[in-house]
Amino acid sequence: MGNPKVSVVITGWEAKYYDELLDLITLFQYGKFIKNIMWNETEVNLDSRVAELGVGNGRNAILLAKRVKEVVGFDISPDMLEKARKKTKKYKNIKIVRKDIRESFGEKYENYFDTALISLAFHGFTNEDKEKIFNNVRKILKPGGKFYILDYNQMDFSRAPFYFKILIDRFECPLAEKFLTYPLKEKAAEHGFKMTKKREYVKGLFQYTELTVEK
Ligand SMILES: C[S@@+](CC[C@H](N)C(=O)[O-])C[C@H]1O[C@@H](n2cnc3c(N)ncnc32)[C@H](O)[C@@H]1O
Image (cartoon, rainbow, N blue to C red; front, side, top):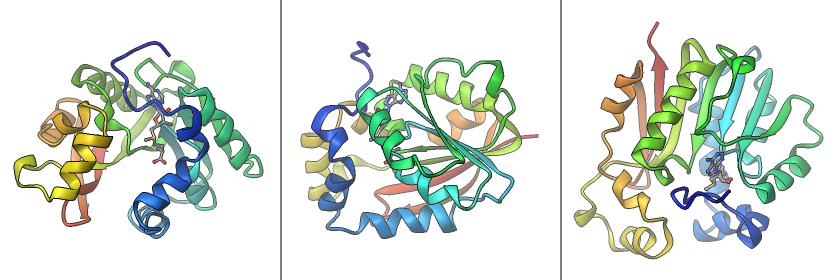
């Protein structure tokens, strides 16, 4: 949408074949990996309302749909939105909304969600935009609500395995490397979130972190 700072907006053929690309890059391990995260590591129940920020083509939303009351998926990319709408059509409790997650979600969604999720996208925002996202998520979550972040883990990049260096240097957006030293726990705390759980995957290269709104 014309902002060069946003580097994780997926369009065109990448949007069209997003699932297939992820499956291929991970040698078809991604399906099992994400199912485990959505089903076993994300605390939800049949009354939960879930916001997914940067919903992509709706893969996570579909995994959560049968376990929750409602999933609202927000995205900025028209191509991803089109794909998500098609894929989630038969799920009556999934709503796909065009939205820039750096902007306010408005009164309608204030204190509305029990859970928020951002998957494989947070690293692609500038630190200034991350602040905006924290602020926005804080407003849409109820007290005690959970904010889950699936992303790269914090690490010393110089000691990372060669295949990870290739991924970050050659294929990722320039902000990804910066995220590896981003003080996630401290920044989250500044916005009233407490880090309540952190799972690490693929030899510690990825994290699934649970942040809870302090009551
Ligand atoms: C790497 S994809 C991840 C998709 C999905 N979360 C997943 O894990 O499969 C990142 C998504 O974030 C969306 N995105 C990027 N910047 C955004 C913004 N400012 N507002 C809303 N969505 C955004 C992209 O369009 C894309 O669909």
